[in-house]
Length: 314
Image (cartoon, rainbow, N blue to C red; front, side, top):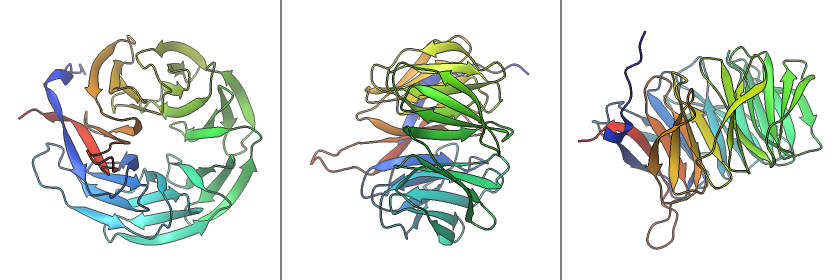
C-alpha cells in the first residue's frame, strides 16, 4: 500500500486551554479519539478530540493528586483507562468516562516516568530516586522494585513486551529482558545523558534523545545505530514516531519542533514554538501531533495550554 505523501506545509495548529499551570505531558488513547494532559497544577484533563478539528472540545478534569502530574499513559487495550504518575508519590488509574480515580498506590518517591506494557497487564514507573517499580495493573500492586545506582530517565517496552529499555544519565541505553530484568545489552548511545526514548509502532526501530542535542535511531533486531537526526541544538527532551513509523518528531528548548523522515534522516517540517517543549506525541491513527511546553503569557504566568498540529488550514 503506497503512502500518500504528507504535505505538512498546508497544516496548522490549534490551541487547547484548560490547565492553570504548564502542561508536562500529553498522551493519546489507543484509538486516537481522546487526549490526556497532565499539569504542574496537580490535575490531569481528558479531551475528546475531533480529528478534523471542527467541533468544540469538552474536557473532564481529573482531581486528586496533590503535586505535579509529570507523566501519564493510556491503557494500550482500553480506550478509557488512563494512568498518571505524580510528584506526590502516587500512581493513579482513572476512568475517562466518569473522571473518577478507580485505583491508586503510593510508591517510595516522586514519580516522573510511567509506561504501559503493550498487552496492558503491567505498568512501569520511574521516580526521582532512580527506582523502577513494576505494577500489576489488575491488583494495582507492585510486583517488582529495583533501585539503580545511576540516573534513570525515560523507560519503554518494545512492541512485544519481551524487552525493556532504560535511558540513563551515563549516555547509555540499558536493554533488559522482561520479566527477568536481566541486562541483555548496554548500548553506548550518546556522549551525554539520554533523556527520552520512543518505540517505532511498526517495531523496526527505537529512537533516543540526548543532552548532546542528537536523536539516534536504532535497529531493534540488530541493536545498532542506523542514523542520527541533527536539527536540534539543545538537549532533546521529547520524541515520538508517527503511526506509520515514517516520521519522527523531536523537541527541546529550540524555538521549533522538528519533524524528520525516518528513512532518509532529512527534516521535512518545523513547527515554530515559543518555549521549551516538555512533551510531543503523535496520534496512533492520524498525522496529528500534540505538543506542550513552558509557554508563558505576556504577564509571565504559565499559559497552561497544549496544541495539536496537523489540521487542514482553514
